[in-house]
Image (cartoon, rainbow over all chains, first blue to last red; front, side, top):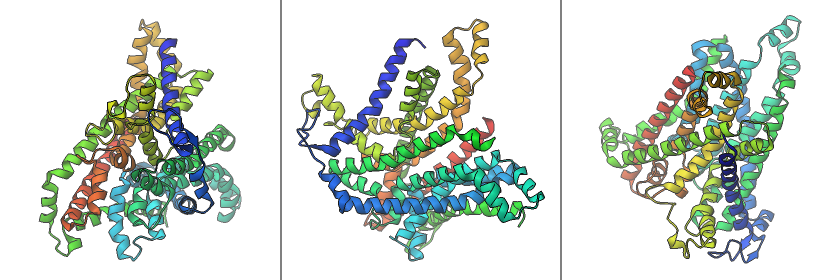
Length: 260
Length: 274
């Protein structure tokens, strides 16, 4: 491709990346920002002061708590699932991959509507536990697919060799699998956290409006026309997501150290 | 427990929640939640046009957004496959939307694409418009242009990452051979590279389409009120004070489940061919 279209394409990409970020920053810190001004007349950090004890702080703590619990819970489920499916091989492995893709592909709103009745019958309607269980479903699906890939690449002979040399199952886990899986486990925890962190429909339906995460607050702020608070909560949502991607990329650069 | 038992338990664990959801949707859609279960009730609800119109609108929007994102991803992967700083910067910019939560994309789209948004302000600064009403409405309109653009941008992150990975793994000899056999640079790209990239990213394209078809956050904030995107219609009807409307929500939920199951089948089929 010649240089001119490449320059235009790069300019377009820069614009599409910068415009949303600039809009969020201007709305989060701007005051009296009337059309057609490109910049606000004054600046404020009023919405950020909510982080000292207001609605934003409560939502932030709720999101972090749920995200951590979902990351740990989904990873704990996905490791044995991914291992069992990878070791099964053949048609069973393909069926397992399709089963893992199902909770990922089913729209969260359909999943939430379906699970809501079941959780109401269990007396869990509108509780944090219901939201946690709801978030766990897509997170376990994603992470099972992830660990299916990890265990496909992991030679089962490592475990067999350690057992032949007299290692107990516990020692195999501690001395062989844990070091090999350290990086995938870190990435899985981050991915599970992010799936919960960004989740809206499952929280809205299963939380019944009582569980207020940061993502749910963004919906409420946008619908109420409170752009400054929506942008502030939006920026808060972006930070861990971008950090996790950066860490995953840095970690991927070191992959060969682990796998060879 | 032998290894096959473990695999079946794993499959059961993964499928249980979607299947419970599906079973409840069928039961409630057939009137079970109101104490009068009859499959005829479900059939009657499924014959109403509203959920089908919502499904058709959502499918078209998802198809257009996925097509735009796929074309963008392939173009970027081909144009910036080198190791220069500009190539690396372009690839990083293209994958930027990947980690951004959909609700933040929706909030940013409102701030950029609304009639008094950043784009309208830029147009006013350039002297193209003088009042917000002169800016074409892109959000909450039946043609769904703003929603489709936001969905395509969100998908571009994932698809460009896939396309760049596929291009990085292609044998450079393929293009060189095509050129040696007399193909122009453009023909070699169109007849050799693009089909190979397409084949590599196709399962990802299906997954992205399924994600967009069932997504809620962007259609809820950027989509039209009539026809309602399917995911939005499900939630609105499920919260309706009218019990009959709630029953319709279950019929719409079943359509979403059916679309997801079709997407899983399509995805597995495309993966087996890749």
